[in-house]
Amino acid sequence: MTDESRESLIALPPEGVELRGPRLLDQVHEAIRRRYFSRRTEEAYVHWIKRFIYFSGRRHPAALGEAEVTGFLNHLAVERKVAASTQNQALSALLFLYKEVLGRELAWLDGLHRATRPPRLPVVLTRDEVERLLAELQGVRWLIASLLYGAGLRVMECLRLRVKDVDLGYRQILVRDGKGEKDRVTMMPEKPAAPLAAHLARVKSLHARDLEAGFGEVSLPYALARKYRARAGSGSGSTCFRPITAPPIRRTAWCAVTICTTRCRSARSARRPTPPASPSA
View 1 (tube, rainbow, N blue to C red):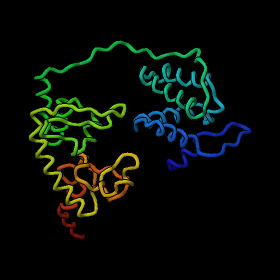
View 2 (cartoon, rainbow, N blue to C red):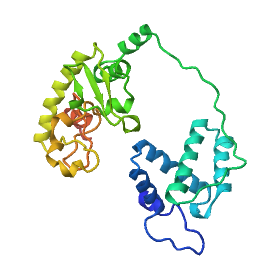
View 3 (cartoon, helix red, strand yellow):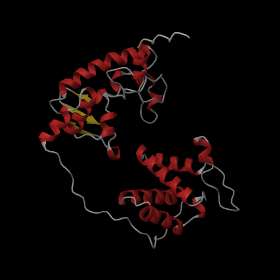
């Protein structure tokens, strides 16, 4: 069964009610994107809404209420033994579903068993431990880990880092669309500065070759992909890192091309000589 057919069968309308218009999950996606939530938040909310519908026997949430929501959250805490943050995320997703999508306020959830959150102490590495950890990494992985530690970047902030936001002259990095869609400026550590400059020089030539081959466009936020069509091929808008296993992507209005120093593994395997065929009997 495909994802589209699975979503079409995910929730059944209440008895005697014929629902018209967009499907429930389409309404959820639209409501989330109108509020410019992050993509990870959208994925998490849709995931928990699907889990709630399946837990309730694929009944439409409009036919359910506080008792079913409480039963689902108690199931997560008692039987699934999820963490307190996980249960709170599921609760936020269901509150968003009923308030923002279905236009209905849920009353106080009596009998809700909240998952406990015990106090935890963070594990902080010493400088010597960090140096030994970074010494075990090489190449692009060392560069990414050095920026995470030295510049205080989150993982997705580093992987989405664009060339134009790296200022080698001022030794600073402009982080765009961070947590809460906020921009900020952070310092660039001294050790990875020279390797990062060499890395950007290599990916610039790789990006030029990708453009000549019909690849290499970058994603632009919101409607900028249509407004500034020519900017999609700009090297300054390219991101600094791309998974080694990802092949170049053809030019389309919606593609997220990131750059790395080496070609994909499939290209390397294509250059390997073919082993000689075994002699026939």
